[in-house]
Length: 225
Ligand SMILES: C[S@@+](CC[C@H](N)C(=O)[O-])C[C@H]1O[C@@H](n2cnc3c(N)ncnc32)[C@H](O)[C@@H]1O
Image (cartoon, rainbow, N blue to C red; front, side, top):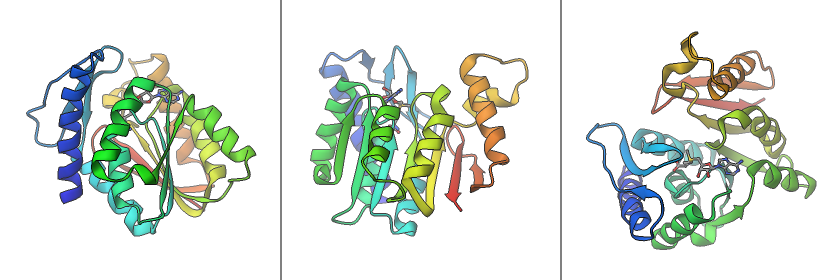
């Protein structure tokens, strides 16, 4: 519980830091009980985070006894803080993000939380980073991954992560309900179609056991068989 509270507090601060740093976000907080708006960004709209989700990530890392983790899509560091705080000393989180300004903010909060030494930030396109990790011989050496970046890339991220994660390891993917749009046949934009197809493929994928959980915008938990 304290981890969740700490992460939420950090990320409320993140919003004001973002504003103070002249980033294109404005500070705004949600009144909903299960979601906190940490920042509003012209590109992503209102960025809401779910404390339940942070707590779940933290729990999964602890239950797995994870030592090596990957996050795809860091933004200002909400989920990566939850993961890094749950890692034991000597644990490592590879944090993939393409946006330098977001990483600047995230790094500040890693430092404040005392977890900088656990987080290896990879600035660039996440798929490129994951491919180079595979080429570097790191296949089957990670315990846990969390995916929350470009929605049209989920299938590709998943295929790459499936190589990097060990048998018994877990991949969690965010936004699989996509604000309910995946279940609405009238919505057929590229992102919705992509997530809808990804979900469908995953249900038939025998390489993993899966469970969809209605927390936040919906997450899928996959365990590599
Ligand atoms: C929804 S935000 C991530 C939020 C973060 N996981 C959290 O819980 O606070 C998505 C992030 O993915 C990043 N992103 C999108 N496409 C990417 C790509 N191809 N490679 C790396 N990062 C990407 C965006 O810059 C953005 O910061």
